[in-house]
Image (tube, rainbow, N blue to C red):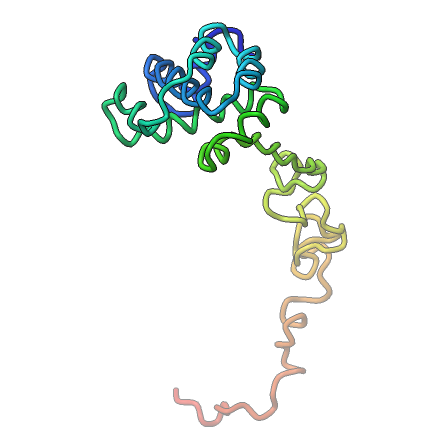
Amino acid sequence: MIDTTRDFATHVAAHAGLAMERCERATTIVLGRLGAYLARPQRQLVADELPPGLAMALLDPGDLAVPLEELVLSHDAAPGHARELIASVCRVLSEALSQEALDALRDVVPADLAAMLQRPAPEIIRDPVAPWERDTIATGRPGSHHPVAEVPANRTQTDSVASPDPHGSTKLSGAVGPTQERRNETLSSADPSPSRPLSGSRH
């Protein structure tokens, strides 16, 4: 239960995004209109769950002849705010009242107001993601499921410092034979029929 009229208006202002003074006046008007639809026993039932100031507004029902939007507009310079204010008041009522009091209201008010007096749906709580399923830098998986730390040790790049003998094919201490032999460029392995024989060369 909300204890004071100001507390109630603060909640309305949070939903409507408007000044609290404007919301407080609109709340009094809306409750007066809702009270006009209720029989005395139901009116007292709802009033018992409201702050004293708002309970008095509900127990002193207003005139049903004037549309509610016009009553709210008489205290609000912006026409577009009227519907938003009414919906916000109904939203706070649906959050503050017991189910019995809320049902008493919804059973007698017009359909458009009854639709605004719906109990808010509970928020959907998603299952938390397991830490090892998150792709974050903190887990070593910034957008990849194959971090560097998990690459098998035998997957080393050619001539990598992680290799048992990096540059083993070219360094002198581990190379087999002179460079010409390794590259197959010795006289014994040369093509015996070169495209430009020595006899045909110019001096």
